[in-house]
Structure formats: C-alpha cells, structure tokens
Length: 551
Image (cartoon, rainbow, N blue to C red; front, side):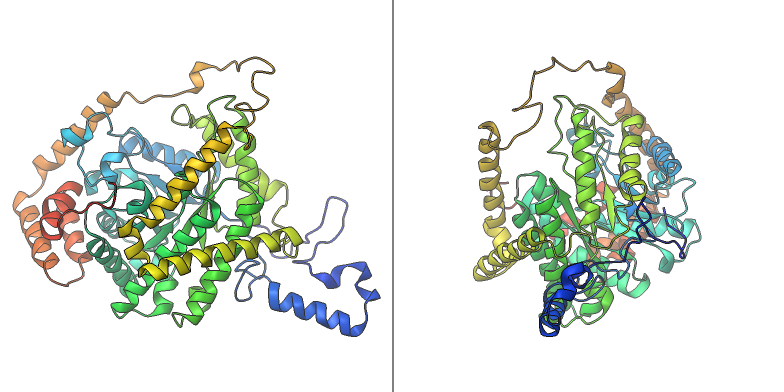
C-alpha cells in the first residue's frame, strides 16, 4: 500500500497538501508582529515539535505514513496448524503484509493437546493448537519468514515459540539477522490480567531476559523479543490512563531488569514494542501520543538511551473486542472503522481490526475480509495519512495528551512509592485499580450513562436483526481434539526419544544455574520435545509454581 516517491499529495479539489501544518500556515499568521510570530513558532517547537522529532508526540517518522501505510496484521489461528496455514495464505491474498498468530488456550498455558485434564474441549477452539516443531512447520508452510514479519501472541511458553521461530528460519535457510517480527513475552501483564503464567516473577523475567539477550547477540533490530501489552488490561476494564501507565511501567520494569543483567539501554529499548487497545477516538489518540512522549523522555533521562531507534516508540493497536456487541452485530463494522481511524491518526505501526461477528462466533472469511478492507479503505482510499499528525496542535487533542501524561505519571509515583512495578503487582495494586474501574464502567453502562447503540439506546426501534445462520461458525472441538492428538502421537512415536531426554536433561541442568536458556530450549525444540515437556515437566520443577494475589 505504498505510493511512488514522486507522488504529489493533494485533495480531490487539487489543493496541494503539506507534510504537516503549524501556526505559520494560517492566513492570519502574517497579521501578527514579528515578535509574536517568533513566540508562536518557538511554542510549537517546544511543546509540539515536528513529526520525527524528539520526544515524538507527533509521530516517529518525519513523513509519517505518506509513502508506506501501517502494517495490516490480522490475528489468526484456529483448529490445527494446516488449517490455520490456509487462513494465513488467505490473508496474504487480501493484501496483508504482517502475520499474527493466535494460539489456543491449551498452548498458551504451556500444555499439550493430549493432556486431557487441561485440553478437553479447548484444543483449537480459540486459536491454533501447536505442540511441537512439526506443527510450527505446518503452520508456516509456503510462507517465507524473510518476506513476512511474524507476530506471536504467546507469553508463558514464549521461549519455546521463539525457539521454534529460530528453528523454522533455519529450516528455510534464512539467516537469523533477516528475521522481523514480535513475540509478546509479557509475563507481567499475565499476572495483572490474562493469568496465563505459572512461575515466580523472577523466573518469568529471566526467560524474557534470555530472549532479549539472545536477540541482541544474534538478531538485528526489527525483531522485538518483548511486546509489553496493555490490550488485555484494557479489555478487562482498565481506563485509557491505566492502560498507558501500567503498560509503560511493565516495559520499564523489564528494561531495568535487562540493564541489571548488563545489557545496553539502546540495545534493549530498541527491541521493546508496545501493544495498545483502541476503544474510542480522541482519548485513545491522546494516549498514543502521550506514550511516545513518556517513552522517549524516560528512556533518555532515566536510562541514558540516546539512539533514535531506542527512543522512538513503536506499537501495535488492536481495536476493542469488548466494545463489539452481539446485538445488531453489523454495527460492529462502524465501531471498528472509527477505531481503525483513531489508531492510524494516533500513529500506530501496525493495526488489527476485529471481525464484526466475533462476539458470537469465530470470524467468517467474509467478515475477516471486511476487516482487512476497512483498514485499506481508511488508510489508502480515504487518504487519511496524507497529512502527518493532522490533529497536532488541536486544542482538544493537545489538552487530552497532557492529561493522559499527567494521569500516567501520577500512577508512576504511586507505584514507585510501593517499591516499583514488581512489588505493586505482587501486592495486587494494578489488579485492584483495574477491577474498580471495570465495575464503575459496567454500572455506568447499565445506567445508560455510556450509550451503546442497539443495546441500551436505539434498541428495538426497527425490530430485530435478520441474521443468516450461515454467517456464524463453531468449531466441533472434540473432532479437532482427536485430529491434533493423532498428529502429536505420530511425532512422539517417530522422534528419537534418547535425543529428547538428553536435551531436556541439559535444559534442566542449565536452568539451575545462570546460563541463557534459549539454546537449550532450541535444542529441545529441534529434538521434537513438546511445549509441556519443556515448560511444565522440565522448567517448573526447577523454577517452582507461584500464583499472584487472588489467583
């Protein structure tokens, strides 16, 4: 979705568009005295700056997304690896340039599909089932990791999937330094909201740090071994300012951990990205702008980072699934469209828009196509990216941006007084704050103070929806479960059992010390050890089990 470099940017009426605008572009600017002009331009420079200038509230690129639009990265995964591979090829056919894999609950918890107590009824239900490297190979069959960046939303067993990614690149004969993508690997967020964790925080951080250290040594910038996520907190009820504060604080806690291990701030910060929700428009745009400014300022002043790559924050945006409704479900298309616009105007590097019928079923291919086309229309056809930071200088947006920053820094102070983010999480502070906000918002929605069209306002005015049942899909989970168990049984039967045992023994031994565990995990993955054998049966006896407050 790029434009030729010599493209003239203009309106349909032929008015040429500048890259960005400031007070000097207004016709009455010339009416001011020379001194006033100088003051206005200085004010703009000091508090707004230009796109691509530190601390980047107006965006991290001088020319924004005029020439190349943000990556379309639809979240995709269901049933088995071969089935999801077909879906990934379908998305590529629609014009997607970045792939994003959703794993099922069994995989996210570090369990195998044949672990009946954990897996029955959940295999392939809300993501793809991946137990071994063979599944990962099938997942990416026919997809070049050199051509397409890959994002993996996986946290507790992230080091296993990082290793699978490296092994797949090796199988494709692609040098590791050419890999691009993201692995979420945010165990702090898991404790706060999503709850897919098992180890004490120090061991979870160790695995995250091992991936970062390995990436610094072996992969180039462009691959992000940590993607601090606020999305799940926001979907669980966090306000925009809470999402901003807790996401940044999680990221900063991880950065500080890496610095304590002797890593360089420029190397680390340049390999951490963020993941935000988008529920609305103005508040979220302000949140994105404030995030960039806080990240750059803290990185420079507190951690001593100096490089552009380290200080220029990159983030992904997914629109709010919680904002979608099963009542009059096609209204979700309009919700997603406006949230997509907010993400683009806020300067996101990549975007995912949920399919309109996800509240009632897995998305149909037609619904997925609508989501992709929505992003293409908003970004490309409607020319919304032709002016960089078109809202910069708006009194409302600038005031909201400063307010977002103030509220986030207030949370920073409260957390620091508790002894830092790790201590705050162990005490349950962010969890309590999110729960309180969530309950308050639910009550306001119930009372009609937060209008939801087709639910608590304008509902029933024209009768119910007529909905074709064929547009809703369900997975027959027991059939998928049996299919995946057969796939796993075949791998276990054909693999070299002594090689698996040796690799797991090595992993257990090195986990008891201070060695980086990426290579031992990679060895186990290539021996066809399963996710559960690595995480639960080998690492858990060494690291132990821990649950946070209320879990």
